[in-house]
Length: 224
Ligand code: SF4
Ligand code: SF4
Image (tube, rainbow, N blue to C red; front, side, top):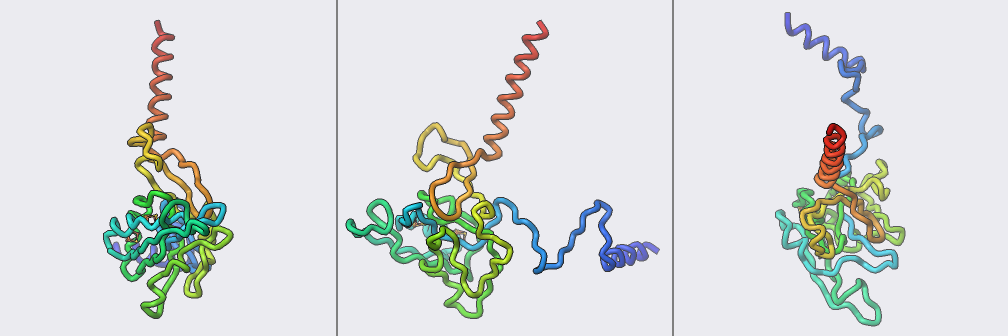
């Protein structure tokens, strides 16, 4: 008779009743969508600074670290009178092949200038190979610092707001300061500008442990 329990579960789901935990586990997708986790990895963007300069310096580190070999970068020298990015070089050609990308985010971690980051957009489907290979023009954010919306992408979930983009992680500070060695930090990243890193979980744990140690010391002195 145990199978009757299975039927009960099936009918409860069919009738739309809630689970024992009180949380409905299914949604009317695509009309309803779930909030995306902070570290969700979706379609990439190439970011710019507030003045419109591109952050990419064409160093090819992202292409070198990519395990799927799906990034193609060719750098070029900036025109001193009309530079595309700060510094000597910029990304002259930049392509990502989404038929191969596994959204591991290693390119984002490798980038020294926070040029490449990932939005939370994952609803994009192609009908031909050319559309699947995103070019630099498609990846660079627009003048508002937001991703360009391509015809085959569904941005209805609002995945292009700055606060709704993927958090990313650095193991060391961008400037290489030894003070930040081993400190893991998170940064929200979409669009313009340079954003201060947020304290990551290890850092928060260290701060909590230090606060707890200080509390214990205080209690210890108080008992004598
Ligand atoms: S997310 Fe991973 S697989 Fe995709 S382009 Fe970046 S490094 Fe390559
Ligand atoms: S996206 Fe970053 S890592 Fe890749 S070429 Fe540009 S600056 Fe270098």
